[in-house]
Length: 173
Image (cartoon, rainbow, N blue to C red):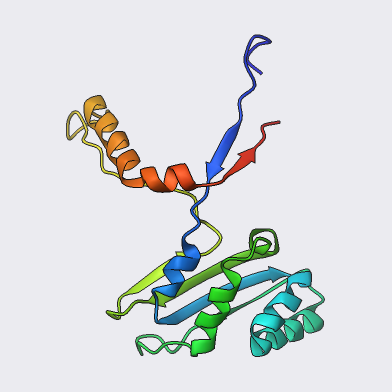
């Protein structure tokens, strides 16, 4: 603690709510990496009986508190997983209890133009990446004018998402 006169500081992560919408625009899943807590296997079983049974078998065989699976076709084959996997993701993405019960949920999804994109369904913070110019090629010092311009640019691009986003409090201890 810096001093008694410091006001309480609280960070709030802003979350995107568009992961489910992104999945609606995709046509297939190429890879799936899923790891869930034991009680959540029942939810997976309801969404996809086969995957639920596979997770249940892994849980029974290992007595692990968290179980998972990784699915992908042979490398360089450009084949997709069964269509039911995309259905599973579409059913899981909007669930309010997903973040508390899934430890990993990543998928490589395919759009209508056959372009692959990896998405992490558990990391949906509002993040914008911008390149900021440096003062000189040989230094790490940034041009402050360019930095502020990029912050404003990112804000302008994401303003609708920022105002619509719910927040999650992060308490410091």
